Amino acid sequence: MPEGFFVVSKNYLDLAIDELIAIAKMYDKFCKIKIISNIVIIQSKTNWEKIAERATFVKIAGQLLRKMSGLFLDEENFKILSRTNTYVCRTINLSSQNIDVTELEKTMGDIISKFTHAKVELEDPEITIYLIFTDKENFFGLSKKMKLQKRPLKIKNHPHELDWKLTRAMINLTGLKKGETICDPFCGSGTTLLEAESMGIHAIGIDFDEKMCEISRLNLDTNGYKSKILRSDFQELSKIGSQFDGIVTDLPYGRASKVSDKPEKILKKFFSIIPKRKKIAVMYKKELGEDLKLNGIKKYEIYRHKSLTRTILIR
Ligand SMILES: C[S@@+](CC[C@H](N)C(=O)[O-])C[C@H]1O[C@@H](n2cnc3c(N)ncnc32)[C@H](O)[C@@H]1O
Image (tube, rainbow, N blue to C red):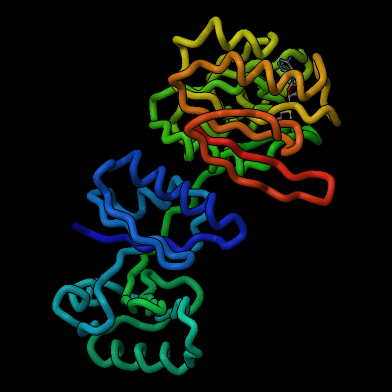
C-alpha cells in the first residue's frame, strides 16, 4: 500500500497532527499512521494529494519512496525521472544530527543528472525529491507540483471573525465528509459556512443578529454557495437536529459582537442542548468553560495574547 509523508507546521503541532489523522481516517478508516516529530507517515489506499488538499497545516507532502538504505535510482524512480523535465533535491532534517544540506542536495543532484535528461530547477520544479532524515529512519520522498487551492472570497469581514485556518482544521477534526451538513449556531460573518462549502460540505448558519446574518449571506452569495441562514437564537439547533451531521462553532466572547446573555451562561446552555450523537468542534474563551464536565472529548489550547487563550473542544 502506498505511503504518503506530510510535514506539518509546528505552530499548532497536536492540532495539525490530529487534523491530518482525522482526514486520513475519514477517507480510509483502515489507514496506518506513524508520527516522527512533525512528520506524519500515512499508509493508505487514498492518494497523498487528496489528503494534503484538505489539510490546513501541511507544509510539505509527497509520496514516500523507500528507506534510504535502498538505492534511489531503482527502476521505478528512474521511470518517474525519465518522464520529468525539471526537478530539485531538498533535505528535511528532523534528526538531531548536523547535516551538510547543500552538499548532500548537490551530490544527489549530480547523481541524478548523470542518468536522466531532467534539469535542475530551483524555483518551480515539476518534482521535488526529498531526502528525509529523522533520528529513527531516513527516507526518500517525492513530491509533485500541487494545484493551487481556490480560497473562498470573503468580501465583508468583522472584527470578531475566526481565523479561517483554525475554522478549517476544526471542520476536518469532526471527520465530516463531502455531502454531509454542518451547523454553526453562532455563524457571525460566515467563516465556518464558507470553509465547509469550499470542501463540499453543506452548511446551516444561525445568528440572532440580523446584521451578522446579512454579512454571512453576502459572503456566501459572492461565492455562489447555498448555505441556509436562520436569524434565530442558537437554541434553534435543537429543533433542526435532523438536518445536520455535526456542529462547528465559535462561541461569543462578550466583546466586539452582540450577545443575548452573559457568555458563560450561553456556553453552559449550549452544552446542555447539543445533540448527543453529533460530531462537534467548538471554540470558546478558555476560562468560560473551566467548570464544564464533558466525556469523550479532546481539547486544544490556542494562545492569542495574555488575556485571551481559546479552547477548542472536539467530540
Ligand atoms: C464569536 S462570534 C462568531 C464569529 C464567527 N465564527 C465568524 O467567523 O464571524 C459570535 C456570534 O454569536 C452571535 N450570537 C450571540 N448570542 C447569540 C445567540 N443567543 N444566538 C445566536 N447567535 C448569537 C453574535 O451575533 C456573533 O455573531
